[in-house]
Image (cartoon, rainbow, N blue to C red; front, top):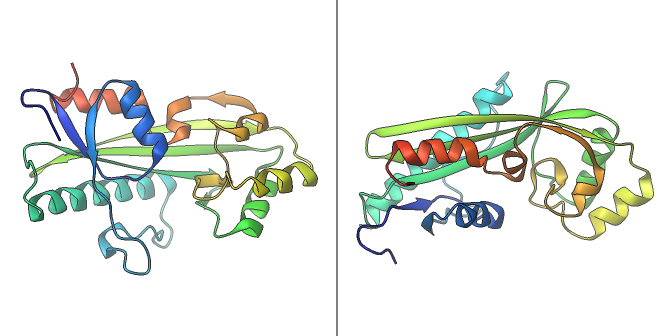
Length: 207
């Protein structure tokens, strides 16, 4: 799986976007897959806590996922000296957290709310190795142009919004909705490469 002497990590995520972004910066990795609902691990429950702010929420989830991934590495007797990277992304609109749509109608409702407004995209990245765990946070602002009902429903019908925080993919057809972006494009995708690269260097996993 790994070549001796080469910096490598485990990725505690099944996101194709995060895999593509890590490959883009030349990081070799293997994925650790968590269990799906309803048998999902309590350690990676994504339910927000009462009154939890968006930055605290995404950092908590990223930490929990990295720590749980590390426990799985140890339990499966994998290469324990390789760190585990995890990330979590959420949207915030007018102080409210917006996660992944439950279904098609929910995706339509989310996009209707985002239409013509500015929202924040927050992605936290965590890397853990033994007792050591570090976290970095990326916050970007994204403004949508006004969307009409027909294009929203046509977009949802493509299936692209499903399993995406905020019901859109900026690297896909969802880019048609974005008229302004301030921050990290890769962070909006789900893995801010500047912050991720900094953490990887701290752990000796990136030259």
